[in-house]
Length: 140
Image 1 (cartoon, rainbow, N blue to C red):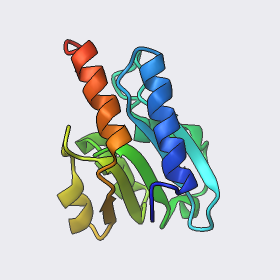
Image 2: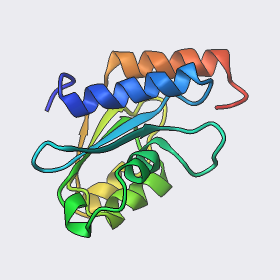
Image 3: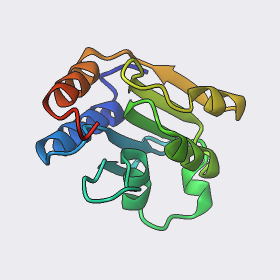
């Protein structure tokens, strides 16, 4: 696992897309065990519930439950409780997080449920969130 993984790169691209749309720059990419990208997405400014991880799941379509089992959810920021729950519910096997300095979500709960958690402490992810918070503190 490294920041050069295609899934992580896609999550960062999604975070940048969210930022460019004026929203919170959090992106996610869901990758099956065989390396197939199932879905990707970012926080949708007009929705209270379409967070990046939920958006990635939504964009994966209606797949059989087995498709999600053991998959990796790449996300640019530590997942909130809702997104953590979705990862547990869909039996994601690993959550790879770009950074957790800005916000720490349900990482411990993921671990308690047997889900591997990897944190990259990525400078690009931290910088994007820092820039967004400085520019739009009222939204954050």
